[in-house]
Amino acid sequence: MVPRPLPFLIAVGLSDASPLPDAGRWRDRVLAAEAAGVDLVTIDAGDADAVLVAAGIAARTETIGVVPVAATTITEPFHVSTAVATVDQVSGGRAGWLAAVRPTDDAQGLVTWTVPDDVHADAAEHITAVRALWDSWEDGAEIRDAATSRFVDAGRVHHVDLRGPHLAVRGPSITPRPPQGHPPVFVRVRDHVDLELARDHADVLLVAGGVDAAPLRAPGLLQLLELDADAGVASRVAAAEAAGFDGVLVHAPESELALQALAPVLADRGGPGRIGDGSLRARLGLPPAKNRFAQARA
Amino acid sequence: MSGSKRQIHLGAHFPGVNNTTVWSDPASGSHIAFESFKRFVQTAERAKFDFFFLAEGLSLREHAGRIHDLDVVGRPDGLAILAALAAVTERIGLAATLTTTYHEPLETARQLATLDHLSGGRAAWNLVTSTDAVSGANFRRGAYLPYDDRYVRAGEALALADRL
Image 1 (cartoon, rainbow over the protein chains, first blue to last red):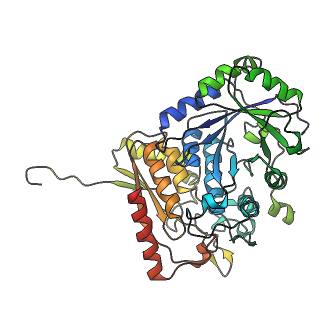
Image 2 (tube, one colour; image 1 turned 60 degrees about the vertical axis):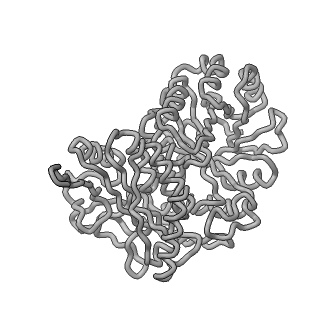
Image 3 (spheres, rainbow over the protein chains, first blue to last red; image 1 turned 45 degrees about the vertical axis):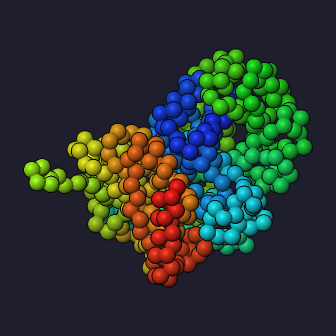
């Protein structure tokens, strides 16, 4: 467990299986969660693109964390890094990324490269590449120095030159470093392969299976217990807190259901409010993200 | 069209990454900040422009491995910024430039459908292909495609998007 003076985290998992996302409905659900004081929502838009749904939500919310799902197995790390950086910029530092791993059989044929057997190794390289691209522009690289006619300081924009068994990315990114540096990366843990990936590459673990999911826990990392919203959820939230989890992620087909079930818990916490600099990292109690290139130069 | 007044369509191109974009005047503001995009698009919408047009570039200009530092560089992800702009506009069209060479066909079709639904039917696609190996080095398949293959891939991507 990360020592943190912050309140127990309450996250709501929103999903929509319809391939036709309705912007108004998504917005209403997230605004209701924000008003109730929920810390963050995860966004799973089914066959639609969750990152784009999140971008629209980011433009219309103020305090809540916005964490869309994007699968590593069927995406380019370059596009994921710029898209999540953009959601982070639009939201003023409230974006995260739920990095999902798809089984090989499920993903094969959806993309124009051959999906490898070892999708977790591919995911590890993918997340590594996304983080490297987030670092490829140092903060303050845009200098706009009229005296020397230089728009950027080329010494603070870096090639990342990653070359692994599954993918290679040269960089730099086309998008400057996002406000949070590294928007928090969430990984869902269902078995020991997931746990290994999460331990090495995630900021937040999503754990299912009740408070007895102890074998799949990783000391020192933020862990949220996944629960379904139903009548007994408030007592299970209390049990999760007692068991040492950092928070819960409550799934509900309708956010109203989750909010009703969570009402006793949320009532104790007051309104939404800003924590620290208002970023999702601050809300999670994560330290500012270091930039590998700035550190190497220092 | 006899008897009816012909109208021209007006598109507004965001002045971002370009060697003609003025940046040295402090009044020019950020070309990256969401607020700049929002102000630009909302102004175009008030002025009754038909659509907002966003270019794409998937690498920074460089010479002999060194980043070109004299012009505006740095841009958001095109689709993500358009999805955010859809949430703060009502009527204006939102046109994304997407290269079929370095975007996946299925993902492109899904993303454009997503943007179209989020915006209430205001999305458009400027389909292009890419020739530069510098951009190719940022993607899984590596270097760029030969001329003929680029257009085969583009045709297949467009056909898939139409079918979906």
